[in-house]
Length: 407
Image (tube, rainbow, N blue to C red; front, side):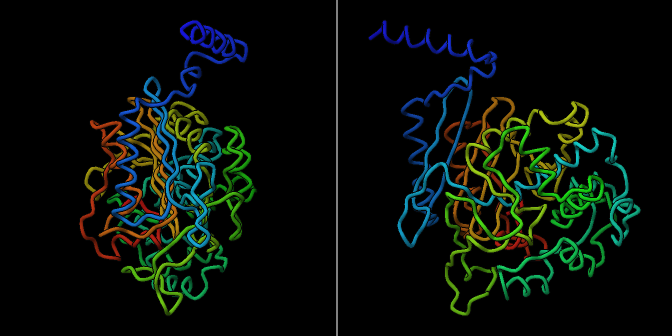
């Protein structure tokens, strides 16, 4: 048995050399966590699911030198009882912002835009657009009203969740309101900001945003299972997503209320701020690249990771990326789905959590609950958590309406 293990190790090493893998890449060869850690993770996830009534979840943790944990729990389809699997596609909500802002920063590297350019240089009709910079849009300090807090927008979406919104329609809802504060004076999460950045990318490149991201962000990293939909379709295989009409602030498109299948609700209302679809393996690839700036020049990556304070305790925000107790990345919520996609640079740890429900448990988002439970086991000195202090709907819209890091 000892000889077999030695031979296997030698063969593995030879394979690494033959395929040209570097020492750093070689460390990604799969190794399971210690059985005690795995058992603790299993319990943390299943206990959280039982407590919050979560239908299904995918959890992935990779820490070089310590191990990998990849498991699915629960069901992907409540009507058929089909079990959740780790290779299923899900909508990732505001994790989309990390892709959109990366696309913008690539244009900065090419000298085609400047972070301190006014958005009015590229998009007409923005209130105060001659004073709001692209940087302030990316780090959520523009002061522009968040269109997903507009009552008319909400009622329009409720009437037909399958309808298609254009970016210009979304901005019209936002611009019907005066800015909330002068640009650069405060921090406030607003999907309006990222929609504008998507339009800037289209204006400068002459490409549709989905084409640009596919060619310049997804393809270089071989994110073949990541897509930016232009309709309500979901690529196979996928997990169904469930949302609760009865919770406070949620949409009420059906008079009966209750939990409904929101899988094929059109994500056009989130567009550059939240429409992307992905899976566990692609997010495993994306997060280290996001953290180390693999698609950007070092100076531009430094600008992205220049984190500033927010109105949320423990949370700092950079350019389309947040930092919470050492973890950097983003969360995402939209009807039926929640995502947590994070990297802990100090340990090169990657954490991905994909949930097929966005129904909060006593004011806590499901992805935050799971993230806290998982990190308490694997990185107890760097526990991921977001506060659940009561906030008004207008200051922090419910996650079923707005993919947001504030939930």
